[in-house]
Amino acid sequence: MSRPAQAKRPSPSATAAEGAWSAKMERLRRRTRPQNRLRICDDAELRQRYDEAEQAARRARFVAEANPGDELAARQVTDADAARDQALAALDAASEFLTFRALPRPVLEELIAEHSPTEQQAEEGAIFNPDTFPAALVAAASVDGMSREEAEELLNGWSAPDANALWDAAWQIQQESRVELGKG
Image 1: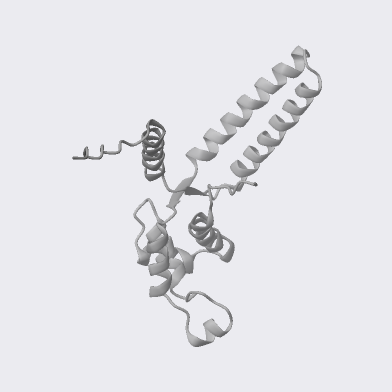
Image 2 (image 1 turned 180 degrees about the vertical axis):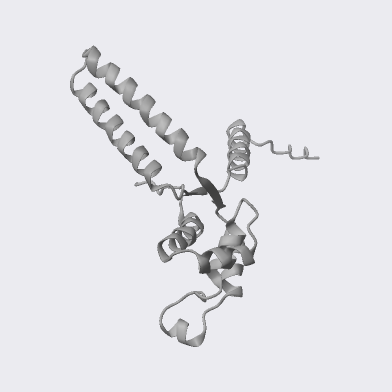
């Protein structure tokens, strides 16, 4: 009479690999989707003041890095950074922000399909209807809860550069990749 075959046990390395994979997959599932924030500020003077303060802080940092040990240069960096932070706080206080989040790929594809181009638009190379899709995307990607009607109102009522910035904020975040294909 022969002995029954012993049950195969997974090798310790296979079990460890499965555990490592499970942990990795859990981290991948928990990734947050990218977000983009659009600043809206009608006070050109505050925007200019912040830009100038940011440039001054960069210049001070450059001088300090070129002159290590120079206490005056180090103090100028501290002062320039404080002035920049103060200008940013003033700009933030005068600004409204709209936040957009990348949609899951199937949701974006479905939204594009719902706003397919007309025959003429498709012949011109469009992948969506530019008359209806922008407002739908802005609303769908809005973290703030903007409705499609509100998105249409802003896209149609704002100046071309401002409307384009609104559209770009919602569209560009859909294109953002946070993965990198390694070499070799």
